[in-house]
Length: 243
Ligand SMILES: Cc1ncc(COP(=O)(O)O)c(C=O)c1O
Image (cartoon, rainbow, N blue to C red; front, side, top):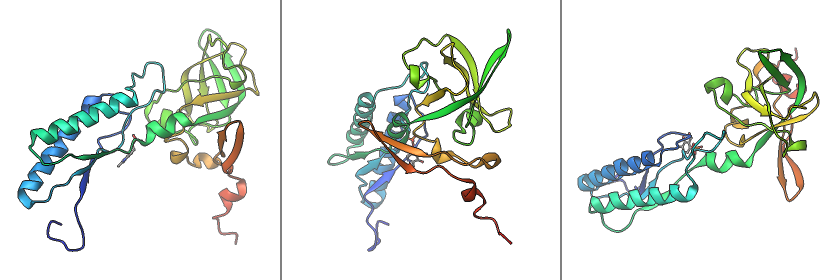
């Protein structure tokens, strides 16, 4: 590429992973990339000044998630990149960009379910079944991800009840929240919310067990707009050969 008349190398990109809480991991990535920039510059004379350090900044799904704030994230990345750049005696300043998808999209969304059944097994556990689950959010089933729960009609209520919120897909692993905290008066027909589902929710949704995917609704200043409509049975069978 150093000798190509068609392409000009302006930068490098790295993505170290997702839901990362340890800022030192990003700092380490910046150092590794800059070492590579320096080696490449020495070998080819091309200085790749634009460095994209990918995504990965974690978000808080559960209270125990110890998430760095975006200001600390920016400070650590800029500091690490600048240190590494000057330590390698590279000329000028690097240009930093990032792609932190989850940290932008996840907190912007929440999922609303309707409670269909509540089953209390005395002395063992209460199960709250909702009209969704692993087809709209595969993360708990796929890798045990934690979520919070609340009832939007009584968002400020105490949540003394610990219950397992389960989906409707006829699967043992169809969990929405394994140890959900809910108001004691949660009832069939209540709307139940799981916050922070704006990333890797709908994008990883499926028609598992032929479930239609839900709608996506954008809300701003009290105005709601359906941006992706709910799937219908016709959508699901529309690809089948009618003959
Ligand atoms: C190249 C690249 N950039 C950015 C992202 C977004 O990562 P995140 O949503 O964790 O910020 C991903 C996700 O896998 C990715 O592969």
